Image (cartoon, rainbow, N blue to C red):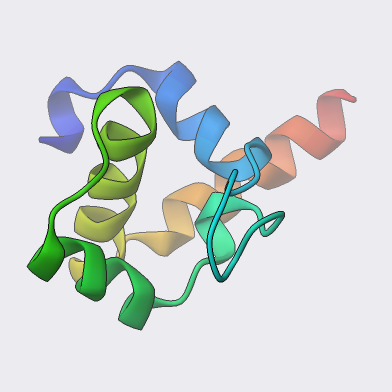
Length: 79
């Protein structure tokens, strides 16, 4: 899944806040795994948010959070 990912989606994970719910306002990549597991059981939202949350779930499930940290550092360096 990640080898086919659009790099811009990964950037959105480090910039986009959760638009609703218990973690409203929290940047997506900072969401706890337990919340993502809940979505995995209940169903991810439709559309782009669902795709982003599902991608984040896979990243965290596979221990690849360091990729998001690297992207965040690069974004901060270029800002």
